[in-house]
Image (cartoon, rainbow, N blue to C red):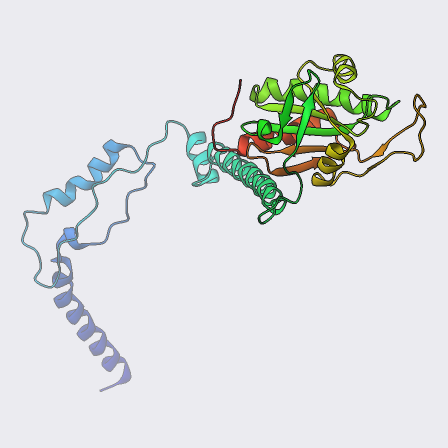
Length: 305
């Protein structure tokens, strides 16, 4: 047999084989032929048309080597405009509202922790200044007020007390500090009520009698209580409050002189314990803020009479 005849015979054999196989391939049901998934942006009517052939072939007998596919019937989120869909795609799960809420929450936490830090610092100062047995600053005393009535340290309790040491013949520092004290009194009363007792204790009992004290303090604030006593009483109370003072030696009667003394406001709590010393570097607003913060930290009832 020639090469040409052999080629023709092989071609005819392949053709017969293909004709026998093609009907088998065409008998595969259309329900099992792969179809591209319908696009999300197609109209709902188009999706119904695409799914109708599947429902039509559901009743037809399935090939034993194939299983039916289950498709999800949940609908995707619809957007009215293309701009809404693009905006959602760009932003993802975040939004301006979520960002603003996050920033506000962070700022609130920062402010809260700063407030707690300041409160714990004030508490630490108050606890550190309390002595064991005998207070480090402050103590018992028995003096006389500007009306000539006895005044003991027990009368300081129940309210916060702001104690200042000075003398009525002071030319500049004491008047300045008492002016500040008057402003502090008003600001504390405005914020916390009548819960503080201002005290002025003289370091010059020889000249500061009750009558002189009453006339002098009237120029600053009516709430300030002036206290005086004997030289030994004043020396004892100054020692208890750790106040330095000195008078010139060999002073003749009627001779003018100055008294050197410490310049601090001593803040005492309602139990008579020392809380904090407020120096000249504090403005009246700053000092009143410090006092009001300590008052806010106090948990027990305060005397407001």
